[in-house]
Length: 191
Picture 1 (spheres, helix red, strand yellow):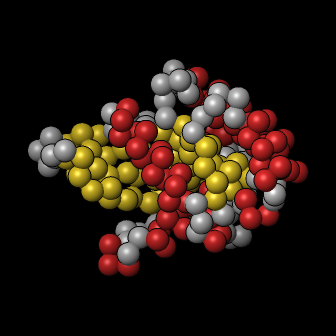
Picture 2: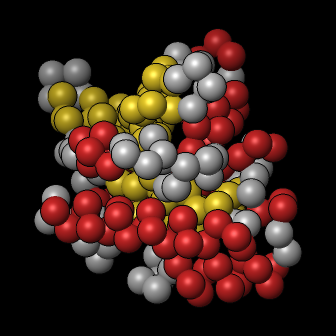
Picture 3: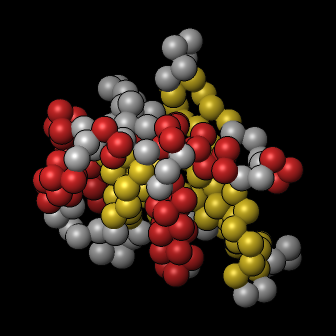
């Protein structure tokens, strides 16, 4: 749930990047981080294991400028996608104002994408939220590794709720701004 600081005229909203393990969630946050001008770049915090895999979450604060008389800030979180981290994902999801579901566009990853999306929808249900009123964007990542026909099949398989969609290659920093703009706009409108 967004925090509104009336004294400092500031709104801070929480966006969670959710998806299966190794779909590129941390890489997405790193790409966003690298696209912020160096003098304005906040710290990216990661809780990783010795292999560099996210254990709990990564977090990155970003300043989105002004909305009316208020400064709008977003706190981006990516959750651990590995097995056994469902409780941690649920905890990070709690209090979120929007979600980017990061799907791995490689066709062999479809079962993991479906399982992770199902887990997300169930978690949102436990938080009494549905995609009808809660901002969710599906971002198909690693699109540089597949052709258009694969993306069409993947979109049809995963996006049965007709959610907003974006495409990216986070490793190459392509498309990350599109999904970030889409989710921040939806979150700002929902507030």
